[in-house]
View 1 (cartoon, rainbow, N blue to C red):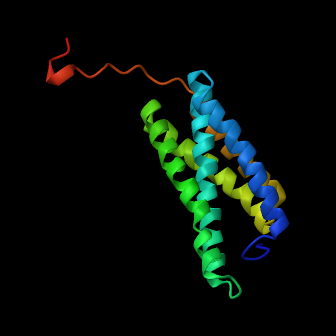
View 2 (tube, helix red, strand yellow; view 1 turned 60 degrees about the vertical axis):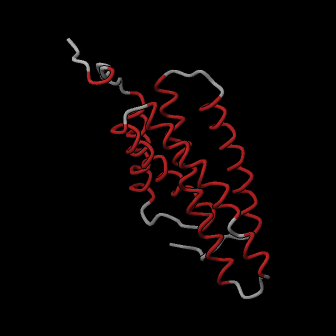
Length: 169
């Protein structure tokens, strides 16, 4: 069940603070730490999922600002800032991940990580509580297992493409 269209100001502040810490850690893992291929894939999938979920929340901020009756035009214009700050890094991280890892592996891993981030956001910001906690927990565990298994599986070796159409022996 949904607890409303928009979270309380206090809970939203906690969400933003935790999001900044999580994104900082994931950005550090993706861009600063030399990790194994599996850890790199997991970090990229997690970062893309969290950023994707954040774009949903940013869109809700815009919507709430547009329908609020007591906001000035300046505050309504400022409501677009979260989306402007989150969407470009999201696209960049997705493209980087697709360039470094198999699309077949990364696309579902990012989708699963995004789904987990959406579940957490719904629970903490919008008071969405599962009707069947046991089934819900089993579903979340399956998603976690699926993302982890996709990111840790060994990729098959691929022959490099030949330069300028030369035939490869």
